[in-house]
Length: 148
Image 1 (cartoon, helix red, strand yellow):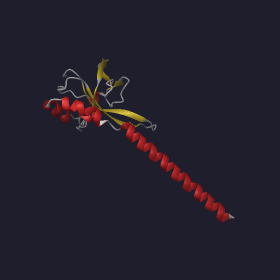
Image 2: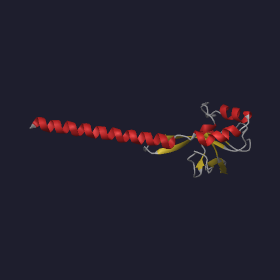
Image 3: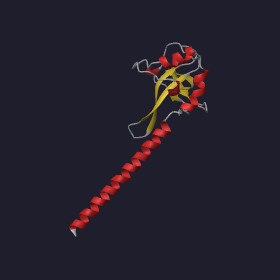
Image 4: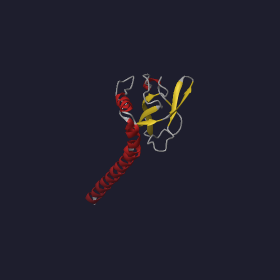
């Protein structure tokens, strides 16, 4: 009798673990798909850029860390607003994979102060996890419009 109870408990624990890991894997895969940028959305934009603009996009670096902002595939055209001396951005281009649809404050330490060879504001972003376990958007770099 005790052996059957132990066997039942072990089976229940194993089944629970398998279900938990299956759900966690499913959530991970769905999150990866949700946050994955659409390369197709930028193929046309990249092809329309001049070689000088392509070089400019590829050379952008985070002013604080020196890390690459990546390429145009990771950047998105943005609308910009200046409020109390700080930049705010949102992306409303329907072709863009950028999830910043509501105005978001740009951290001052990610603002690139070199001239913007593209002209239009560009925001580089990534998805991340907040301390509360929810997905958040992190702005990695920001090139203001108008060639600051």
